[in-house]
Length: 70
Image 1: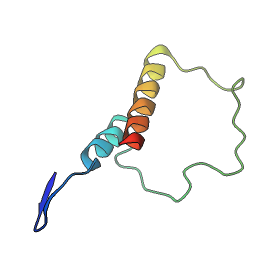
Image 2 (image 1 turned 135 degrees about the horizontal axis):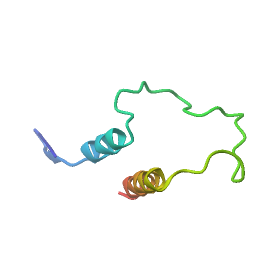
Image 3 (image 1 turned 45 degrees about the vertical axis):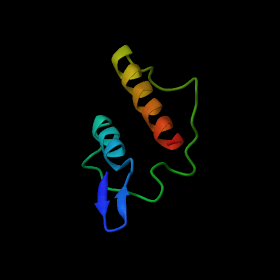
Image 4 (image 1 turned 90 degrees about the horizontal axis):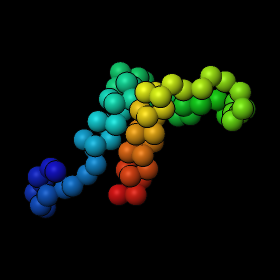
């Protein structure tokens, strides 16, 4: 919450910053497109996440979904 001459301004900036830190990306540089536009994603290929990484991933995705709804 920030105070201005017109009153109080509420935003989710701190919540978004906390999500970025939780993902370990707080020192990353921003880019227009964070993933290659030509990348082919597959549900059957690649390494399976361990239990701890899968839990962290779901937690971050859930937080981002909540942020998108607010």
